[in-house]
Length: 220
Image 1: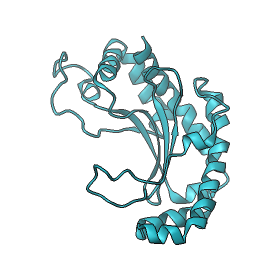
Image 2: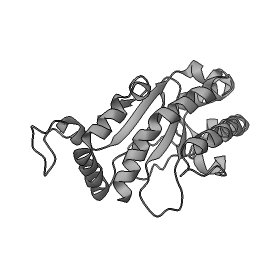
Image 3: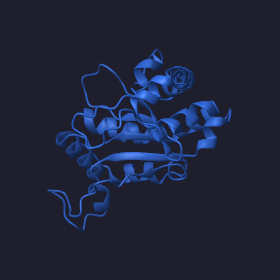
């Protein structure tokens, strides 16, 4: 679980997003960061036990994303992120891999899994797999464990059928997706309760068949 002070710190970062304030509160940042790393340490073995592609010895520090923003090409010049982002990604395979991602941001936290805006060749393979094995994919996303927890992101969804598919395809709305991401919204108070690790473990179990389908689509 996460300490209330950790969530409060990230709220304060959003309110006072400047280098002077951050320098004055560097100790709070270090304490909050260690709290999040300890939380990630609890999640890693749970995920590794479900998805054997994810290494159980993955250091938490390699999962936690930096709080510092790259502002070089952004109109938003705030130097710090207003969230803790954790990427549970398989390392060193040399192949595209679906990712598990935990986003902790007061008022907008979520667990996600899948491919966000994959490259054209990866997206093509996913669509082909859904086309070839439609019933299998529908069984996965219609399963009670998945459907009661996750929703599919429709961010930047195509307005027309992708090339090679007809508008009357039975799952054309799924084939129009440009990202294949399952999202599980989380409330702030859930992170403050001891049961959050078990809750996320259950979510990992529910989304694993979706991740496996995407993985198999890409590696074939």
